[in-house]
Image 1 (cartoon, rainbow, N blue to C red):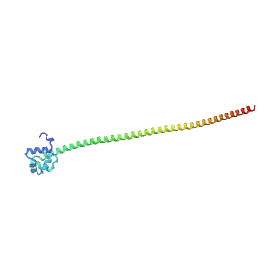
Image 2: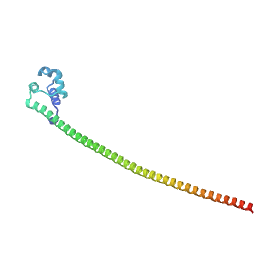
Image 3: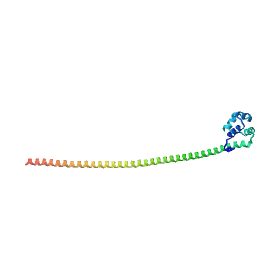
Image 4: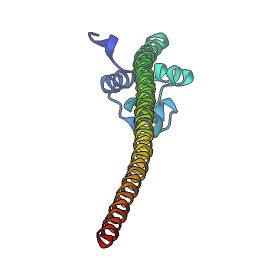
Length: 185
């Protein structure tokens, strides 16, 4: 019949039942297959066993090979579907592996960038620490120089004050002498 190549075993079984005027209960009684088993074969929830194919071929008076061929075609179609599904799974796994590799690469880049920034920060901190120490040294040198200048200025002021005091004494001594000299006159 046309379209038989794509017909499932269950559809073929239904077609044979209809052609022979059988329902599931009658087919069950004539074939020895439980009614629920017949229902599962028709719905595609079960595959026929070899002995069931022989029993059904006798009931429908058809060649066992013809019935088996429909069962085998269905098995082949399922096999092709399973292979297609397997190929899709391999493809998905490959995409997953690529995604995981990209994630690992990004994690590595993030760690590298963080390390570079940490290094840059450390270099920045070291440079500023070095500049700060240099400024502290300069400030200490300025402080020492200021203290030396202040000490020198104090010494100079003290010397000048002593000189002034001496001049003042000289003047006062001179004045005293003048006064003494004026009195003696």
